Every structure is written in C-alpha cells, then in structure tokens.
Image (tube, rainbow, N blue to C red):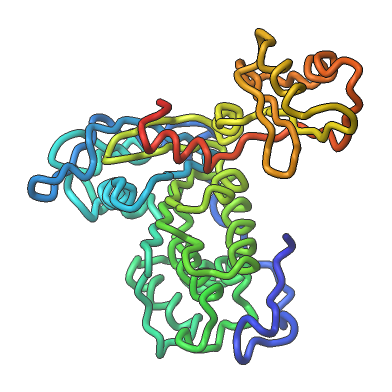
Length: 341
C-alpha cells in the first residue's frame, strides 16, 4: 500500500506536503550487512513464582525482521524489555551490536530504538516539538537534520505543527516510530506496533516497518498472524516463556494443518465415494466431505498432490478445483496447544 496522508486520518492534516527538499542522508552504518545485532542466550525472568521467560536463545542479524508471536502472557513483552535494558534478567546474557546489555546499558540505548506498547507522549506538544525534545534528551548534535529525516521517513511532515492529542491512532503510532528512529539506531524493538489501528492504518504502519528493515534489524511482537506473514522474514512462536518454533513465515505456513489440501466439487457421482477412494491412497492423510458437498483431500507430506487427486477421482467429473494454502494462525493454534513443535 502506498503511503498517503489521508484527510480523514487527522482533524487538521494539510492536503499536501509543503516541503519538497529531501532531508540530509543519515550517516552510514559502521558495520556491513548481515552481522549479528542481537544475541540472546538462556534468557530467563521470573515474576514471583511465574516464569515469564524460560531460557530462550536466539540471534537477529542486520536485515532481519523478527516477529514474536504468542498468546497473552507468552513472554513477548518481557523479553523485549530485557533486550532494551529496561528489565534485568534473572539469568542469561544479551548483547546488542556486540555490547553486553548488563555491562553498558547506556551504550546499548544509543544503538536501540524502542517503541513500547501504548508508548507515552506529551499530548499538548506538537509533533515537531516532541521530536525536538527527544533529540535533546538523546543529546543529538545534528538535531534539526534528524528531525527532518524522521518527519520524512514516518510521513509526518503534514502534521508537524499539530498537537499529538489531536492525531489519529495511526499518526500517533507513526510519531512513536519517529522518536524510536531519531538517532538512526541499528536495532528497532517494536511492541505491538499496529495494535488498535484500523485496517488502513495497519497497512500504512506495516509498509513503513518493511521500508526500515534493509540496514538494521527489527524485532516486533504481534498478535496478528497476517502481519507476521506480510512484514517478517522470521517468526518466533512463544508460549509460557519458551520458544516453540523459530522459522520463516513461509516455512511455518508450509507446516500448517491443511497446507496444499485439494478441494473440489463432484459434478457426477457420490462425494462420499470419492472421498473414500482418496483416503485409501498412500499419499493421503485423509479425505472428507465438507458441509456444502465439497471434497477435501489433505496430503500426508504437505506436498502439492493435485495431479494425484485428479488421477484418483477417475471417471468422476469434478469442478471448482483449488489447492488450499496453510494458514499461519492454524499452526499457531496447534503449536501453542503443544500439538506441534
């Protein structure tokens, strides 16, 4: 989706961007692409008798967008707070851009941009004044250049003079992203960055996140399975503080129940007889008649078995044949119930 500053997004948004001069380019990164920017080993955190994070380990490299997926209470926010240094682990180690978080939290904060869930902001400040305040807190030498850069990156120029309290949720979220980006960090930590946004606002923020990933690493938590598929190149599923799966969204989709299942309508013949015939094939994990009379055959190995299905139906005429792709939410439910690992 192409970013637009839609007039119904904010009460007094300008109809067009007044500024056309591009901001000064940010300084180049010190390291080459692909190096490890986050390294987590045996990370553990308790809240009383509750083990919120249970010995997790992973690495994130430059260019990665890692999605933390999991139900409420899975440990996503706790893990992110420990990576940023806001919360001290009970056990384990964290390094950000090669810096031990426990040893030098201030140095780590200079390399991390953090957008917490429900990020606080001063509603009476204008967008520009708030970003200038953040730049001063971070003691940025080229503060004005940094402000112009993030106003451009987050598509906030048209509301720069508007008070934050008058902005829509989508714009407020972009202000949060702008403050996280103002010091041009190597690492972005985003906790539920699209929570509470409408579908159009979600798409705008997701596109913005995707555009930011080329020269840094991003870790985001989300409950939205489609968001992980759209934005992330890695997905970690957590439950009860443990990592159950660490893979790519595409690989997870391929593992999802029903991936490459073939559905069709039987034009002549008994759908139950066709389903029974398919069930006897070695490659078939099961076939059934769906409500409405369609037949679905699920492959045992997750491979595309369309040709085998068509061969097995024999002389029966079929119509509306289609191959169903597995859904990440189906695997998510199975994994968090402990059905798959």
